[in-house]
Amino acid sequence: MTSTLTRLALVLSLALGPLAAAAIAQDAPAKAAAAPAAVVNLNAATPEQLESLPGIGPRAAQRIVEYRTKNGGFKKVEDLMKIQGIGERSFLRLRPLVTVGSPKGDTKAPQ
Image (cartoon, rainbow, N blue to C red; front, side, top):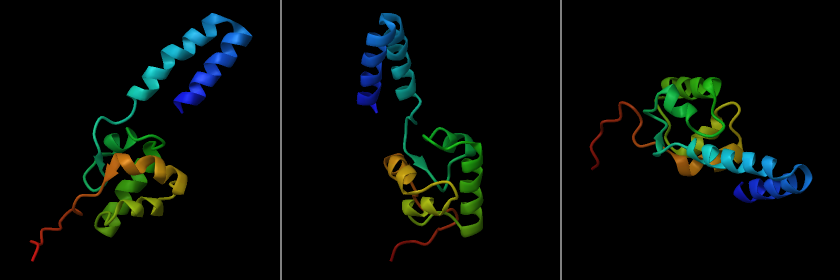
């Protein structure tokens, strides 16, 4: 993504002048800062925490909460692809940013 922004800045600087390139360069760090600071636990996150993930808006966050309520939590991060609107490409972008930990209510001790 950064290389795409760099290319775009170069094209705009050639076409529109240095002001356009400066505006894009200032916007790039803001987009990078929008990524969540920590890994988000799909079984414990609030809708607001889920919305901090790239590509997850209010409706997707609500669907994630509904899924974990109905199914007793996510068993594996790949279960995220069972959510409407989250396909393989979105999942691959989210995978390093999410975890499942233990499903809510799973208090069995390991044997």
